[in-house]
Amino acid sequence: MSAKQADSQGTDAWHPGIKSTLPSEYLPLSSMFQAENVFSSIETATELSEFTGLAIQQLVFFRPERLVTHELLVRVSADIFVSDGTRYEDLG
Image (cartoon, helix red, strand yellow):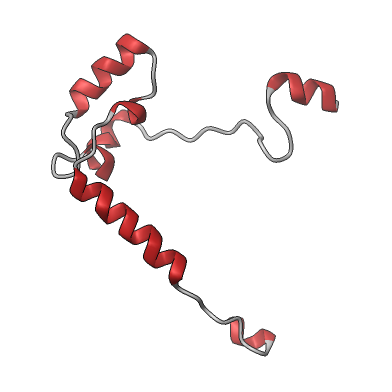
């Protein structure tokens, strides 16, 4: 495939066009769709997705507590520093 063909399809070495989706029977197990994390139900989000054509993930209304937890995890993870060590063997 030439570079011109790759550009016209929207794929290239860094964007191979692979999409990973979760089977619908596993969606209720995702924290994104659990009642304690969101205001909207999975049924409502699915119905809106079918009506609007938007991805179901874009139609979920998160609870503030879930957003705070996510932000906290991101900030704490960003502040953690693990030294590489002075020798290659230190890396494991």
